[in-house]
Image (tube, rainbow, N blue to C red; front, side, top):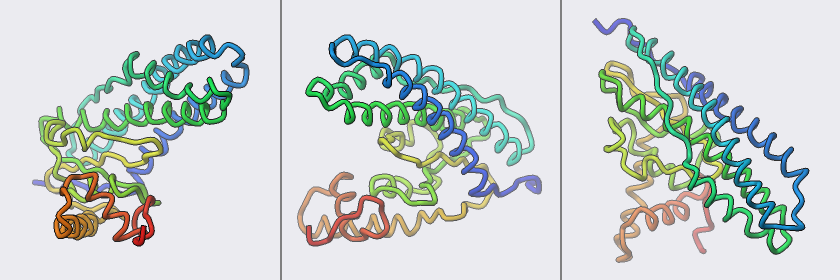
Amino acid sequence: MLSWIVCWTRADLERLGDALDEAARRAVVDLDRFMARLDWSQPEIARDALAEVMQGLSVRYGDLAATEAAEWFEAVREGAVGSPMTGVLADGASAVQVERATRWAAGPAFQGDTAVTADRLRATLTRFILTQGKETVSQNVARDPLKPRFARVPPAGGCCAWCLMLAGRGFIYGSLKAAGGDGHRYHDHCRCLIAPLWKGQPERIDGYHPKRYEALYKAARAKVTERGDPADASTIAAEMRRLAPETVTDGVNPAE
C-alpha cells in the first residue's frame, strides 16, 4: 500500500536552500545598487528612502522565495504520497516590521558609520526573505490533510547552538501550534530549513543527526541543573556552546 513512498534526500533539501538563497542574493544586489547612490548628508531622508526600498524588496523577493518554496513543497509532496496538493504562499514581513528594522539598522549611519548600517540592512533583508520561504513550507505542512510532520534541519556546514537545540527535537512538529514560537525563530544568517515527512518515510536525511543533537542538549541541561542555574533554553544553549565548541558554529572556549 505504501510502495510509492520515497525517501527524499539532502540534495532535495539543498535545492530548496539554493532557491531561497538566490532570491535573497538578488534582493541584496538590488539593495546595494540603491545604497551606492544614497546620500547620507541628510540621514533622516536617507533612512526614510531606505525604508521604502526595503519594503519593496521584501515583498518582491520574499514572494519569489515563497513561490519557490511552495513549488518545492508540491514536488516533494507528490513524490512522497503520489497525489498533488497546491501550495500557498506565507505572508512576508509586515510593513511595520520592515520599518522598525530599517530604523534600527540605520542607527550607526547617524554617527557616520554607513558600513555597519549596510551590513545590518543586508542581513535583515536576507532574513526576511529566507523566513518567508521557510514559513511557506511549514504552513503547507500544517494545512496538508495527510498530516505530515516536519523537522528543523541544519545546513551541511553546521549551525549555532540555538538552532541545534531545535533541530534535536527531530520530526516532532505536526502543526504551527506544536512548533511554537521557538520553532519558527530564525536569526540573521540562519540557513536551517524545514523538512517535511509523510507517513511511511524513514526519518533520515543525510547529515541530519537529531539524536546526537538531543544528547548534547541533555548533557548541557544536566550541567545547568547541577549548578542550580535556571534550565531555560537560553542558558542551556549557552552551555552547549561550552560543552561542544567544535560542534556548533558559535562555540566558545569552555574556560570562558
